[in-house]
Amino acid sequence: MSGRSALGRALLGALAVALAASLAACSPSGPSSADDALAVLDSSIAAGDRERFDTALDRTVSQSTRDMWWSNLGRLSDVDFERTGDGWRVRWSVPGERAVATEAVSIATACAGSVCRITGIGAASGPAPAWLVEPTDVVSVDGAVLIVGRGAPDLSAAASVASSAARDAGMSLLTVDPDAPLVLEVPAADSTYALVTGMSSARTQGLGALTQREGGAPRIVVNPARAGQWSPSQANMLLTHESVHWRLSDLGAPVGGNEWVSEGLAEWLGLPRDADEAAASRARVARACRDTDGAPVLPADEQFSSTDDADALRDAYALSWAAVDELVDENGAEAAGALVEQLWTTPAEQLGGAADPLPRWCAANSS
Image (cartoon, rainbow, N blue to C red; front, side, top):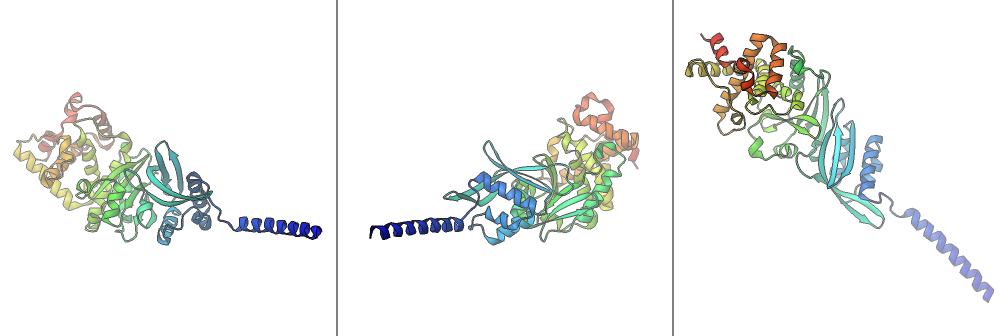
């Protein structure tokens, strides 16, 4: 009797061990921390491994969101989630891009036992990554790469025109890295435009496009509410204007009082793409010449940030264009570019007549 009981206990023990091993083999496996979950995202995107990608995400993340993130992230050339001192950030770029965008994100995780998975990714502060907020395509054309929301206007031709205009300007200031493609974000909806810019609609709704830095990467962000109304020539003009800001973003803001050199150079390159806008700007400056007896004043910095008076804002842009146009006429494009670069960092009063070309424009263009 005692022998049979010992044998029975041994058999039961063996069965228990086998059952435990079987349950362990069938138990959920996955990342053991939030850091591990993000590392799984990084590696699965790089390897194109959708199954592994899904193991980092909690089942509470909807299938449509999973599909969007996978599709969007797979179109990028590099993705890297990392912990910072006070949260998380993601570094990413598009094919051909020289710089890397860096943006703060919020990461929510849930852990069950030793397994942690991501339940949500959101924008923490500032601009949201374009891939995070809507389905996107990445479109490469000659001289530009566009991150385009599904259903957004097709601006690929205008982006290519803008890139060519900067390369062909005859001004080395605009061609420091001539092979670097312009990078544009074209959201499909007003709500995603607000998220991608990270700004209130009161600041951005009147703009056709803006150039901002997302970490180390300059990006031209297009306002979808405006872009849908543009003619091809208007699109060419506006994106060419922004391409100047994009190419000169490393210079930062001009010295106080000289904002006109930045906007004037952008208008000088952009206006020739739209004959009607060019004629309208010329007419505005001619009127200012008449109204001031040939001595209009260069626009002050604050005139470019005041968007509640559209007519005054157009005057400021037109006068800035005329000032740079006169510098180019007097010196040629290359030398004028050097003057513009000087004016970027040198107060106007230190440069004498070079800093006040409007009276000369009026004299040269009076009828």
